[in-house]
Image: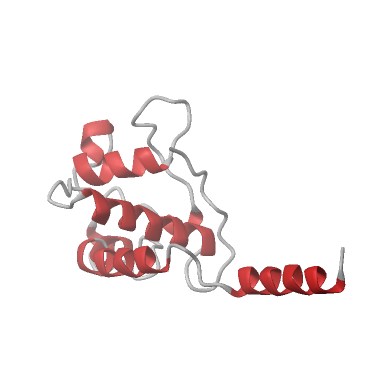
Length: 139
């Protein structure tokens, strides 16, 4: 490899390593949707500790743990993107869960996709302090 080619490859590698994530706009939209639709129960960091959580039985899911309960599409994997999408759209009761997780069918496809991406971010980062494990991605 020539010195010029090596330099170009090195520059491209550095740029790629420091580029903002492709999902930055999606995550920003997801954060706004989460704040307006989810934070009252799931809390600002997704730990299931929102202002209404203390009075809810069962308690809201702690997204920061990255553990999801439902395999809504029966593919053998609970908590895929398709599963989260289905629970957001249909509510948890449609899959044997709590009726307190209401359906958010009024959200469009792009909004649901952004919300799922933001929930994944909460699970991946384990809330604000880190330490959570990443949830399985799917579909």
